[in-house]
Image 1 (spheres, helix red, strand yellow):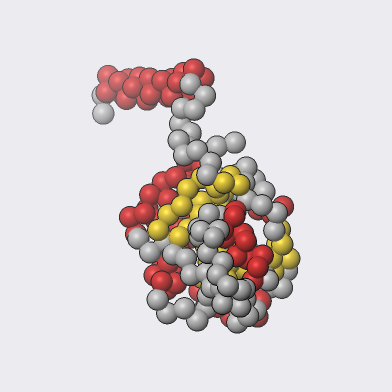
Image 2: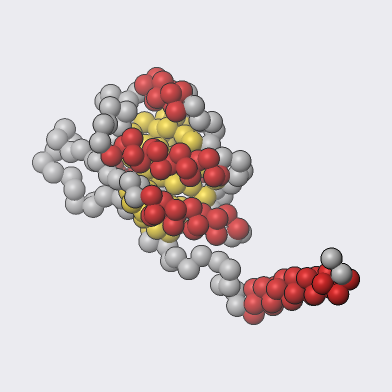
Length: 203
């Protein structure tokens, strides 16, 4: 490679870096997510697969994906977790990223059951956390924080209410819900991955 070619490569590299720096200074939103917040994560306290209490303080400053599933599900959940596995593999080494999988069926999915399930997934449960709790608190979080189910979907009583959502909720470092994605659609999950990369760069 000639010195002239090397000069042009370095020149254009510096030109691109300079352009990005200048635009980021002149336009505060340049290079940042264009998704406006659609909600905010409310305070919560759930129990993880190891029996440890997890609250909103444990995810503060993290970008995370929230979803709902149940261990006995044979329809959407396996597809969703196949797609979520792609997300996990992509970001498992990112210190500021987490996945929160909440059970929709806490009567069945105790911490011990979630532990067995997470072991079968062979994932790092410091990065992909499985949560249980009371049904009303879990469902309230899904509907009012993560926006993955209509808040009015609470029929005659808590006993007959059941949440079965195929959606993933993406939350930024400030606890803002930024978007909802179809967890059983690979293209939508790939779109979410692109947005996660943007959110991880935000301060």
